[in-house]
Image 1 (cartoon, rainbow, N blue to C red):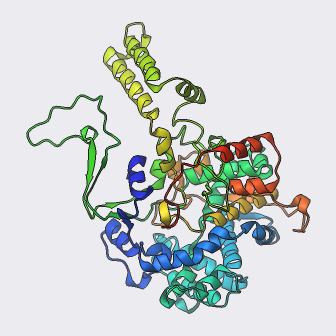
Image 2: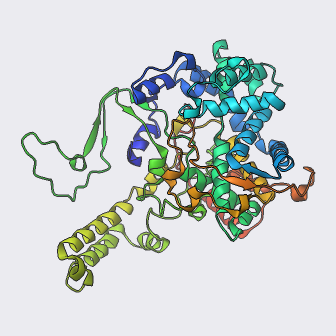
Image 3: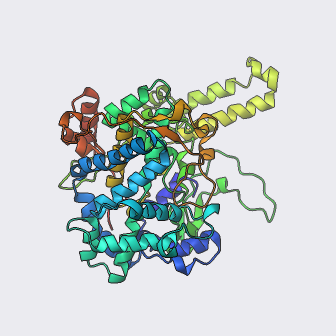
Length: 545
């Protein structure tokens, strides 16, 4: 799926009866044309499509992830993260590879917060090793399937065994204990106890965000990220745009024949002449016919870089989220205020001055003026016509007008929200995204608080010379894996106490937390006022069905 209008048709409100998510095995067969390995059979909730097992698990776990106040675990997060930073300082003078640290920290956070267990020594190292191997199945160094794990176990089998063992003994109130005490079928409990060990999005989101913070040589960005919790969320949101955690969303399969509007259809175009057997070009078809059984899948990064909807998508620009800093959107329930899904700062590829002009006039008059301007540019008065030829310049003027018309279309702002999907879309969106964002926030803050720098001030080559797609490892991975290492240095902690409120991290991951935080500033007051006064027109299918 390469257009947000079609993404909306597949994932939007009321579409769950038209499209059903494929299971992991069916997805493997569809995408690779090879039968899935029975030794890697997994029926945890992420991998089972929309069957009854998924529904049982979703119903059982939703209250924990949606209703729990995760601000209560902020101190525990800071403690775990700082223990790893202290270890890097004591063992190697603070020098380390960044993903090594963020991956180990994320696994430790997951184990301690969701299972209430603190694994130490070889037990923890082996779990990290097994999960690292499991999420990079395409790595040439792992073709033999083992990493010298106890008993010669595979990465897959070892982390599943650990998940079941620590989960069955988890303390009451933890996610693991809720799984064990739930009505989830017994055969699925161990599957889901292991699955949440694989929830490693914070490791990669924090990696990319820390790296971009450090590429600012002045240090001002890092300082602002640390001190401004709202800007911190903008940076996290922008990192997730540039490097969405997973390469693709699980495919959906059409449940019936459908016909949908063609977003590429342009009624202004003169139909092309066709031979007797010639097909109709896609942009000349008013509708798209979808047959029952058609499979559709989405690659988030393609849409995250679509220049029709993003201004300068290749650049890390946290300021694009100035008016929409939070990834999470609250729903209209008795427990929350009314919020509307806000738009990003501009129409894609247009400066704010152009946006203001469009908003102050009718779009038709705006385009009429533009059409006259581009037509006038085809005359001899344009010196480029002399240099490059009338045909070339006429073609470029027409292309510029077409581009402007597309970027200012009446549905562009609506479609923008379907171009951003770092945590998935619809009722299969990441269940633990509230907690995941808090983890990223905590990791990012604590590394900056400990004055992290690139090792010897050397910016990694992937940020100095490579484009965004060259920064990602081109192998079969569960997550978008950095192509190159990022060596860093962290300094010893300034304070050893987690009780001093004056030095405690302030974090807000949505507007409800912002309202409760007591943070005072005109900017934040304006954001709250805008959110509270907005009419709630958001009926996205993130809601449970």
